[in-house]
Picture 1 (cartoon, rainbow over the protein chains, first blue to last red):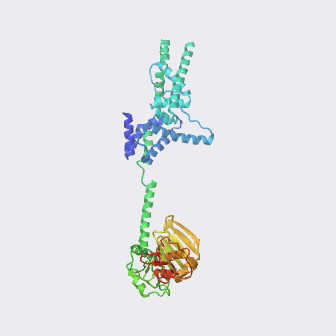
Picture 2: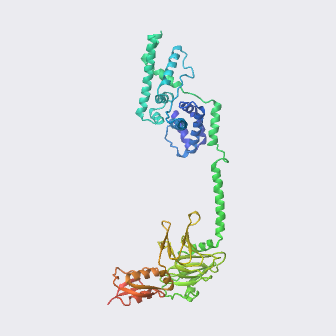
Length: 188
Length: 343
């Protein structure tokens, strides 16, 4: 249902409906903003990236493919833009650059009223932040952005198999860490 | 209580929690105000792009100016002598000459302009004279400024009844030898199919043909500037005497080479000297000279050699008949082919 709407919006935008650009913006700006902040804590950089992204859509409207997953297309484009800036900035100070994936160890909103549950989630969140960047990214795209593996592999520019492995390993590691915590707690 | 809960968690291996946590991390949102501001910035660079600041408008303005100035230049050119001449030439080129029957004409080598036969072939339309030389004929004419033009067969020269303005301009289709009278203040131009030749005072030969590779000029004396195309496409070359410039229409290339000008001069004079040349080569010469095709029907003519002067003041038929007189061959002027004499 949602996907159809995205696709319809996308199609009508390509076909010349200027209003569709605004609707696309409203539909995706928060998701893009949140996703962009995974790579940098510079909110202005992310906002600039989003701005460029939508201006580019308008500029290259006639060259855009109609048959795309809109969400992953936008994610990929934004990530590319931010990466480019980050790499450029990194190049001025040091030679190597590794793309981070930032997940701050704090949940913005209260998920549950259960005190124990809250503690557990908090811990899980802490562990999550400690995972390798690419695993975090895969997990984020899978469970937060609710994307299919195919699209995740597109955004991350890795094979489908690698993508599945990243998610699998991420989940596995989290489980192990949590079990270790749990065991530690019992022993204590 | 705690341990029960914990064991439940361990059984589920935190799968639900992991999803739950992931679903709640990294969900930053823009405030409505910031969101609107960002959209405004995007809109200004896309859907609401102000026309005045956009490069597109500059491009449009530039395009309009370009068109306006283009029209201006076009209107101006419309009224230049060159354009009038070329315009007129365009209506004439390709027209069959009215006098298609095969006349034997004595070319006018002393170059006094209006002999009888020439007058027959000159038509005057809208300030322009058109001299048409039929197939297998030759002609010579003196233009109002004193310039002499020898025209080969199947050629056409268009020139104004009177030269006016700063330039002297003529249009040529076919082949001609020009002896331009010197007048520095009024440069002489020969326009031909995609070729323009600027002249001060000189002798040169021009061959122009729309459908062959025979587009060239040979400079005998003086200096000419050969050019083709216009505006940015214009290619111009200066020639010195003894040079031939060839214009390849297909490749749009100019090629300059050294040639012996004697042949072109003698062409003008109306004779060619041959020295122990075989008949097939001579026939080729004649064919080239009169710009006609002569079939030799695979006859082996290489053993027939001639020395002497070929008098090209006569018609092609006459020249060939004289040539064949002492040979086993006969020239069939109707079919334009050489045949073995019937015994």
